[in-house]
Length: 383
Image (cartoon, rainbow, N blue to C red; front, side, top):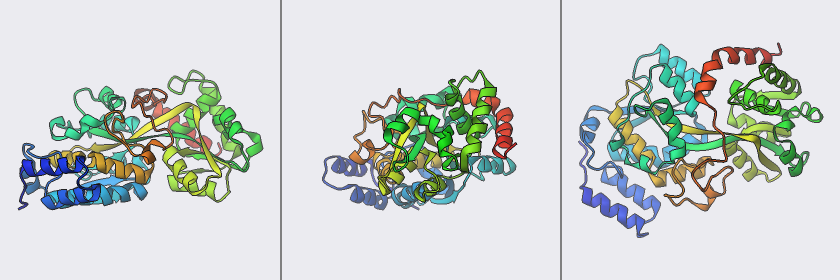
């Protein structure tokens, strides 16, 4: 059995870190060696949960995000608690939802999910739990602007907590498209006939419809002329070289010179520009903001999952992961001091309000998904 240190010891350790007596790496190593993660000291039922649970399953998009979480948070959580984190990856979240529906409760524990629309899909499918906020004190540092969309869906209690946020915008090659042109045209670039065969975009019905709504002068969260939207999607389809299905593919298409402009996730844009300053990034005329969240599913050992979430939401784990994945963390920047690297990321909001961004309405989009998604799939195939 793990021997747990005293609350006093861990509080003194944390105070030493806050005072600058020890660096972040030494702090996390000391916490792991102590056998208990910061912030969960004295929680009711914690040791009992560890005695009963040997492992939890965590699934995410993989790549640099999961590598950063493994290096900073997951490994230290395992050292601290003795609970093994079995990791898995996926390409499309709909595949995970389909497998969870076909499987048994507990096949999936924690999923790195793609924001509030997906949160509603999971909740509508009956996979929700109610997290005990008292067991996750680090959630107090999260931005209310990112928390509220989840509360709107499940006001009786949360099953997920936001982890990071970003935008979908447009990356462009400055050799062929000037900054002035990109700022003037924005989503209009994706239906510019002069760029035929040199365009790409996300092969996702909601993204394509969001962009087409803007191109046809409409509010993406209240589309009144569907025919105009489908017409713009067909126009875009006739000009693209190919649609991409992963963040890595979006970068490869642009970096290789196959395309000159494409939809892109802001973190991927930051990575691309970091590698090659010949690329630029602009938002749509009405920004498309989303967040990544950590979702606990029905049938999971909830107390241990709460412990995991609290550890991953520790300030220093969040900062290290954000710097690796190039998406701002969900912590409130008016409460938590963030690094210059994070503050320089595309779409970082120093106010923590996210007032300048637009989120998709999960009630609106899930209501029409069954009709719109198949329609888009036919157009994407050329029909």
